[in-house]
Image 1 (cartoon, rainbow, N blue to C red):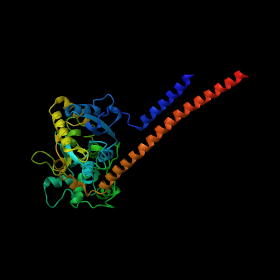
Image 2: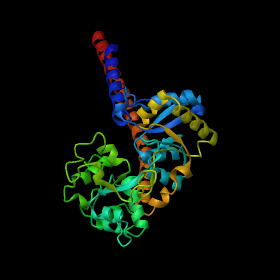
Image 3: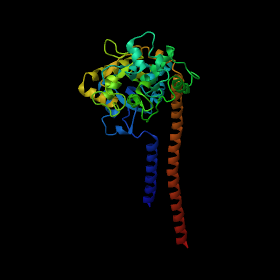
Image 4: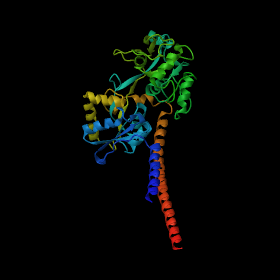
Amino acid sequence: MKAPKIAIFTTLLIIISSIPGCIFDPVEFDECEDEDNCLTIAFETKEEYRNSDENPQILADRLEELMDVEVEIYTVSGPAATIAALEYGKADIGFLDGGAAWLSMSTRGFEVAAAEQKKDGRPYYNAVAWVHKDSDMAQADLDDDPSTDPYTLMAGKISCHTSPLGSSGMLLPMGFLINNGYVEIVGDPNTMDSLYTTVRAHFSEDSSIPDSGTLYRGYGGSLRCLAEHELGSATDYISFAKDPTVPDYCGDDPESWCFEGDFTSTEDFYPLGGYDENGETVGFGRAPSHPVMYNPEYFSESDVEDLRNAFDAMNQNADDLEILSDVLGTPGITITNSSVHMGTYGDSIEEVPGIAAYLNEKVNKTSSEESSNLVLYGGVAFGALAIVTGAIFMRNRNQNQNIDSEDANTSE
């Protein structure tokens, strides 16, 4: 008699357990047992973390050893969710890109505790416009003729950007060109649509502003857009990217697309502004690497100091450096602060149309969606429990009716 009950209950438990698997993050991480002795890290996770060296739990475990606190991973879906988690105290620290970090500092009062390093050890990279060395832009720059401004010659060219909000591929170059009077904003400066309109009005209708998952997305995609120059000569194209992009993608182990068009060697790629005495490109300014952000309202100065000491210790240990490389994709962590790391980055990008409103809207939308999801998840759980309870009730009721019927037949 108990077997049907157990079967129903087990089946419905399976149904319930499958619901969170569709709604919640499928990767599970260790949780703190003592919330008063817990460091929570907001982290963008993915399915591939399972059984992988990239799993952030490895970083959490190491920080736990170094800081003598419990460490918990709080999963987030992106920069907006990271900001929301820090704003409401759901996480103590989080990793943000330059634009999101600037927004969180200027509107939420967040601070920088440390920063990831690039491959060459710098906690920044330079935003650069790569062009063909034979273009009028490159020739004007190389000739150093004061009557010819290479940035003026950009008008009408096909521009290749890394993404709509990439620091080196959009925000810094557009901020530079707008701040210095080369580009006029077209449309409402407080809407994101105006950024697209402004780019295509100044450069070309064929300019590439790629979304996620598209061919010319990212640093390599922007450079590939220039290298392939499908709609004309390479001299009519500009690639906005970071300074190591050419050696990274077309250097010792070049991508197949690097030299199929008008480019025959890395010498054909020229960075506008040239190089300084240290061999760095001049470009449009420095884009800060991903900083480790915290909210001073919830994370104290002593907490920050402990975290910095832990990262500093990891920088001195080969095994720990491997963890940083596997989990964060960085060769090390630079101990820094907000003013040093962010520098004049905010001043450089704040005139770019729509970005502040766009990022704020994303953060606010994320916060409201999280609240709605809590209601949804609660409703799903309640509904599932109601199904289980109802099924068991109906089974018991049917069994009781059968027993009553059998008793009645027996008495007759």
